[in-house]
Length: 340
Image (cartoon, rainbow, N blue to C red; front, side, top):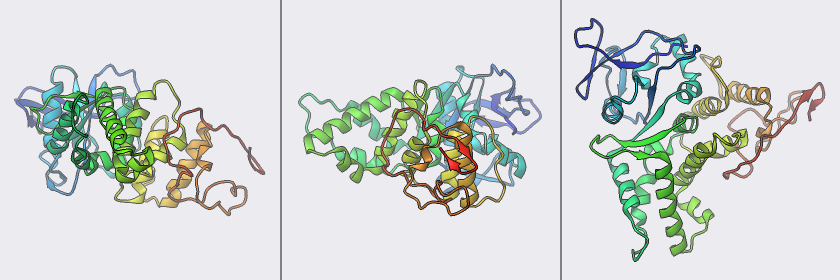
């Protein structure tokens, strides 16, 4: 893969320059990612949405109309605290082969970052600010319309953002409106969890009721918990299946790209023209190589190929009980007759 960053440079440098928040940023030459790299960089996690605009560095390409706002906010909050920024629209190479290799390495790229900057829309960030400011003592019932706004947020619902956050060492939430103060990931989890707990208690809602009403927020809480405990516990394949089947995707292939990006320990070869079936097979093979067979606890029909009748049929994997789980991996081994 090619690993490049946006870094600050003098204005007279002869190469395409991005002017962001008063800074002159350029794309570095390809860095040696496999070496012991001491560069501190921030990965920017955001959602593209539907709007597009020309790419100022690669005029033949389009970028999201949220890209520059997300980059601007991250530069504003982390300027002087890091050596560079990684954002997909500018740092993923345009060459088809190199792009595929880079996209297959998302876990490594996000996992080595000093910080993950999650950029929410101003509307969603304002809703969280109101949630964080809500005081249980003498306050009326928690206003559920704040949760309604977060439930609709495209970042919270996206299947892509799971792999970006869950492997990050540190997560900070910021707004496209760069004037809003940043919020630490653990603080975000605690404030949101407290608000939801009080709402459920006062309205006599069970966790099952809450999931029915707010499926995306429920999955979002699981994501933050998964990120928080990941340094201490192995993340099973089943846990990833459970979380991702409750997140939105535009294409079924995106489900497996995010799954593979979460599970694979390092860069992998990503097929250029994959099908859901080949991606499912590749995902299960990666899990077997890792020694985790918990994907067998899927409600899919079993495979009919000789020696694979214990495996789920290749396709979107549906967890038998899609809930947040901890615990160890499911060990197993294969031989000529099947699996133990």
